Amino acid sequence: MAGSWTWARDEIARLDVERDYHRIAHLSFVVRYGAPMFLHGLFSVAFVYNVGMPAMARILHRGGRGPILRDTRKRNFDSLTFFGELYRHGEGEPTRRIVDRLLRIHGNFPIENEMSLYTLATLSCLPERISRRYMGGGGLGEKECEAQYRFWRAIGELMQIRDIPPTRAEFLAWMRHFEQRRFEPTAECSDITAALAREWADYWFPAPLRGFGIGVFHAMIDPGLRRALRLPEPTAFQDALATLGVRALFLGKKLLPDPGERHITDFFGREYGRGAPQIEKVGYQGDGQ
Image (cartoon, rainbow, N blue to C red; front, side):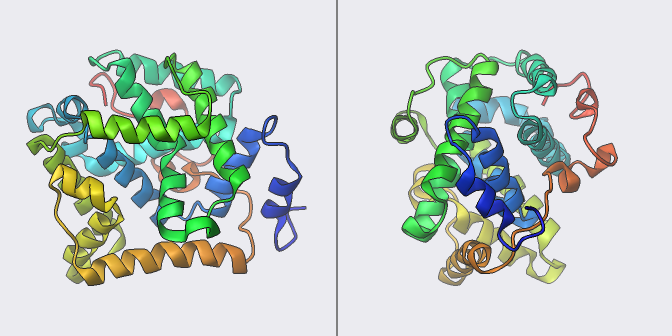
């Protein structure tokens, strides 16, 4: 019951991951771990992974005219609103309207299936990678990771993404191999990463500490990926603070009460009013994403 100290954990334990993966993914990723600062950072870091693909970096950069550079916060918060509504509705009818809108947006750009598949991998596999990096086996549980994979696999199928690996382990292996094959450092990647780091630091750190916050953002990017993409290296202190912050979040979720029911758009979709936003109004109108 929602009034108990561990209500979300208890519900996850009762649910069947093969049948209830959407509810488990929502309870885990949104309710339990959905602290706005962490989600904002995680999805921004996931964007960095995406622009490791030179073709994707060019699409998003657009010679400096892309919304990710011109209005980074709106671009980020709109993406979080789309993702939040997918977590809210699962595979229900509202999700089909969200998928239709995303397909219309993506249809404006030359996005190959493998590029879409990699973006799906960042949603499906990156939370597990970050959990393992910082917490080993003490972070996200097996059921939570499997539910995240199954949820995003279902969304990917609705998005008409082909060749999704049939297991979580295969998808994670595919993701790492893709990075080795396709990632290259580019000026566009560096520009977008800098914009994402500034936006996150500007939002969460007071003005005198924003430069320090940019270093903390870079610390959250996998060290091997930072080197491969020739991104700025954080100081040892910034790296230690990022590690401490992520570990504190995970440990706090073991010791503190589960939050009440909530949705990502409660925070990031406030521009669109209270409650579930009208998805047709989310994002830039007529000029793509």
